[in-house]
Length: 345
Image (cartoon, rainbow, N blue to C red; front, side, top):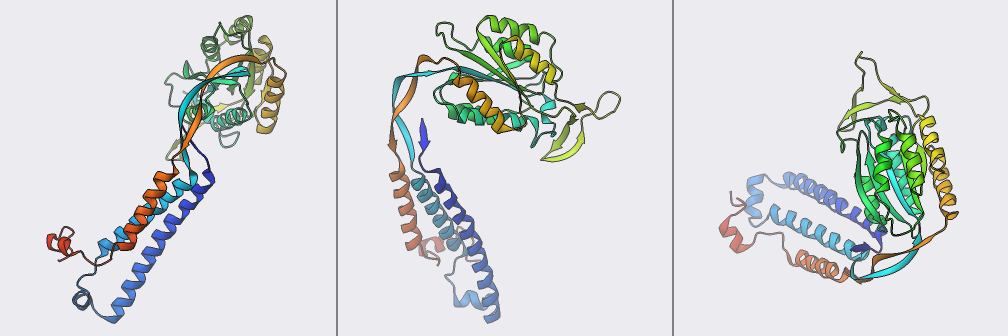
């Protein structure tokens, strides 16, 4: 396990493209100036040891030096000691709809990306709760088991897309059934399932399955993403819209937010339906709900001791700087004899 202490220093990497641009401008200026002074053959006779390769190598080494120094400033740390700690919280499973209808852009940037934003912000506001993630479309698929590792949760969340499940539809009932297997029956924690979906093309069994889940002690909260007026489903390639999804009659499919289904599911499982249009409202509502629940103590493993690793990158950066200082732009004698880069032609 590793962590980055000062991520803001990554901005210094912007120096690297500046160095490359300045190098290219310098080479262009040299070429223009030398061309005015003499022709190519005469310049080669006057400067027989001039090496373009060595100039490029110096720039590459300088860029590597800045890269290493930047990483040193960020100060990566590696966990060296895993400890079992006691925490208090709620077990929360997020079930995210990844059906094709979630590509509709009636809510910016689209329904799926909005869902990811909502879950990410909710996780960012958690303290010691455990989280799990499920992806579902025509079927449900486990993404991340219950864990306190929020970084991993957000990583899995960001990788979710509409191509990860081949079967289409919105099988909320399958997601609810899978969520019931996430919770440990031996630990009497408060169990929460948060479903993020447009609610369209759902299974009729969803409400009944939600009631069964509630009987097992699971409260279900639903978040609707999309617009009631709806929107088309874009078909894109390389970020460019090529067309919109059409039905068997050749008409453009309009997908709409189905709030009624999501409200019924929440009602059957002692939960609440929340419209996902405003991220702040969603986060605030979920925070109030979780704060009102009893917290259960459980054990979790986490890295307690982290060791700094900046010194390795600092040393490497200084090493590259020294190489850059002593690396001359003229041809090296023994390399010149080998003529590896056809510089004698």
